[in-house]
Each structure stands twice: as structure tokens, then as C-alpha cells.
Length: 172
Image 1 (cartoon, rainbow, N blue to C red):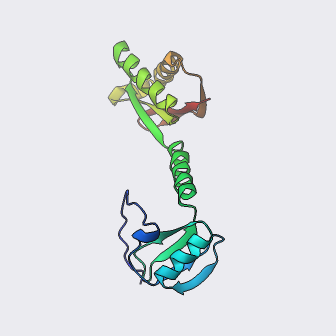
Image 2 (cartoon, rainbow, N blue to C red; image 1 turned 135 degrees about the vertical axis):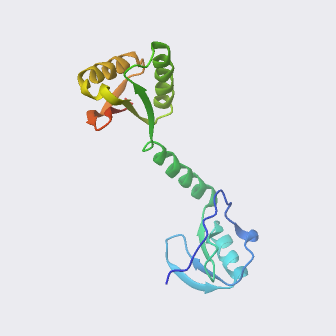
Image 3 (cartoon, rainbow, N blue to C red; image 1 turned 90 degrees about the vertical axis):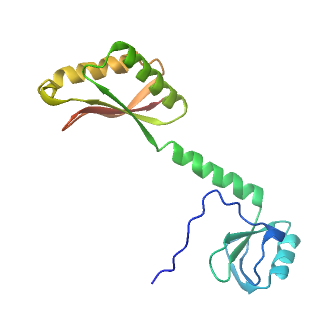
């Protein structure tokens, strides 16, 4: 049976003297497990190497601490979150009878998403008897794409769905 660990969002990791529980399981800068060591000795080892002692897994008994450069660790974590941002797909939904002013608003929104580095899925929904006119939907979608002023690449070609057509674009 796996123990239940609560996910804590935006929780700052404890560093050096902020760590409260002794003893700790110590991992060195190379990833080697040094075993269970008293907290004050672990802090001394980290200071000798000119690095920080960071509590990586506080919910485990004993807590897991790692000897690393804390600033470098924070930088790597921020890079990971930025790289996942580019995989997020933002959606814009239009209809066959969407007015031109509303289309302009949706174009501005799509451009804003593209500038921020997101992929954009433009979905043209067909309702009721509109489903018969898929050719009009393709034309409307191409017209919408022509309004976008930012250079983009079509990542997924125009694709027919049960309730309309869609395309995924991303910034060049």
C-alpha cells in the first residue's frame, strides 16, 4: 500500500537552518545516498562543500535532503515550468455565423496567445443543419487564419470533427 502524500503547491523548500527535523537522509551533489545522518552534521558537510542543504522530500520519514546549489536548483525548476508552458494548447471557438467584429476579437485573442508562446487550437463548431456545409466551414476557417497577422506554422492540418473542423497553429 502506497502512503498518501499531500501535494503542497507554491511551498518554499526549506534550506540549511530552516530544516527542523533530525536525522535526515542525505544525498550528495552527485546523487549518491550518504545514508541517515544527524541534521547538524549534514549542514556542516554542505557548508564544507560550499553548497546548500535543501529538504527535497519533507513528508517522508526521515526527510530527504540534498546537497545542491539552491539558486541553480530554483533556476532549473523555473526552466522546467517554462518548457511545459509551450506544450499547453489554448482554444478559440468560432461558429459559421460569427460576426466580423467577434472574429476580430477572436483574432486578437489568438495573436495574444501566440505572442506568449502557446499553441492555439481554432475550432469552428457547426450546429444543427450547418453540419451539411463542411465546405463553408473550411472556407471560414481559412478566412479566420488569413486575419492573423503574426507568422505562424500549422502544426495540425485542418481536421474534420463530428461537430465541426479545427486546426492547431503555433508561432514560427
